[in-house]
Image (cartoon, rainbow, N blue to C red; front, side, top):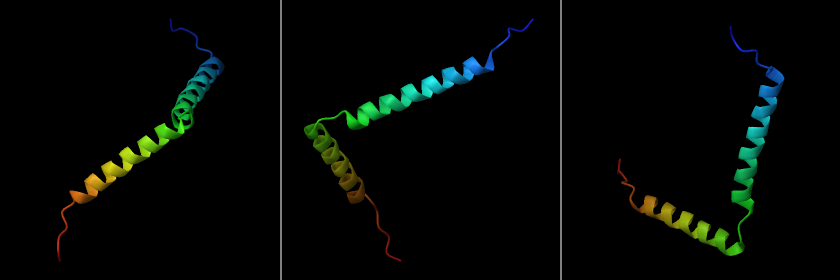
Length: 60
């Protein structure tokens, strides 16, 4: 026979997991020092320039 599942507890467990995932993302996003933010921005800018420089442009 199948096991009885309380849907309310499953829903609450899913909500808790979602909140935990969101909290982890916020800690990563907002829990950085100013120098870490600057470093991350520099890395992002460098990667963007690298991709832009590697683009092949076609003259139509």
